[in-house]
Image (cartoon, rainbow, N blue to C red; front, side, top):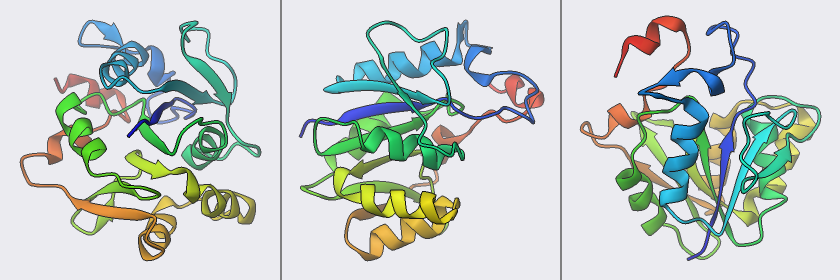
Length: 189
């Protein structure tokens, strides 16, 4: 199945103290590492979502402004779901540099018509490395309009509606979900 992919790059990076997207990690800025990873998956459409168009965005990557009011990843997902030109959207956060091509390919293999997948670690969803069906746009838009910004209850609702299938993350896969939130996290490699 064809899918679109979006790199969520709209965070304020308060704990990090500077824009995470431009932080050098493993010899390249995070934005470049993440876009290179998404390109390997050959999405039909590649997007970056942020409140404003980032200076670092390559010309071959489409910019989609976070849905207003801009309220974190929910705003980026709503904006991207409303712009995709196929049935699924792979979402990846800018600050998850340990994510692997192999893991994302496994997720892609598990999607179905009108059904996406979300990794789950110990009963907690990982909604920023997941694949959503276009049909989930109504629930995402409703949550944003109501100011319900937590993705956990929204993901549970989508699972209950049959629009998302949970995928249990094995103990050996947990490390790919590590993220960078504060300067001390940069010491991990």
